[in-house]
Image (cartoon, rainbow, N blue to C red; front, side, top):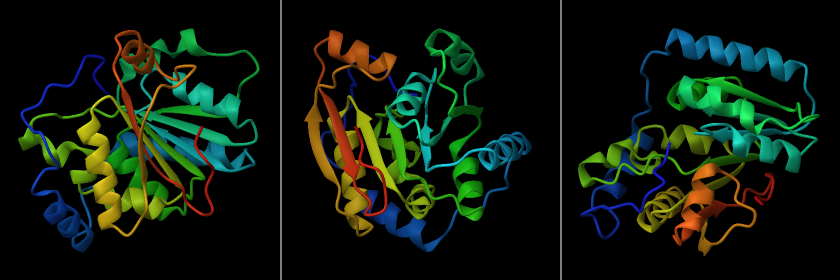
Length: 225
C-alpha cells in the first residue's frame, strides 16, 4: 500500500529506463509459478462470482477495504473484488463494513498472481481501481512500481477502465506515460476528492497534499467516480 506522508525522492522526472522496461515486459511475458495461497484465493473468487450477476470491478491494493465498500455502494449492480496482500490490513476491515452492502469480496492475495489467473479465466473488469499503490520512490525501485513491473501487460490485458491515484505526481505521470507507450490515451489531473474514499486520501487532504489521478476510460468500461 501507499504512504500517508509526502513522498520524498531523488527522482525528479520520468525514469529514463521506463520506456525500455515497458517494451521488454511486452516482449517477454511474466511466467513465475502461481503461489498456492493465491490459487486458493482465486478459486474462492471464482466460486463467489458464480453466484453473482453484473459487471466485475477490481479494487487492487485495497488495504482495509474502505475503497472496496465505497465502490460496492456506488455500483450496487456490480460484483466488487478487493485485493490486498496484507492480512493485518484486511483484518481491520470490520470498521468499514456497511449494513446491507454485500456485493463485494475481500481477498488476501498477491496481484501478480491474481491478475494473471483472472486474465487466464477471462475476467474483464468494467473498472479496475489502483488507489495509492506503494510509490517505491527510490529510482532503483522502478521495477516495483506497477508501470515498471512485468505485470503491466497483464493489467492492460485484463482491460476495463483503469483508475489510479497517488500523492506522488511523478508516479501518476509515469503510469500515464507507460499507458501511452502501450497505445492508450490516459487522462492525468490533480484532484481534491470529496468525500475521501480511503484512509490515505483522508490523511492526504488533511495535511494539504495534492492528489494526482490517472484514468484511461475503456470504451466498454465503467466511468470512474
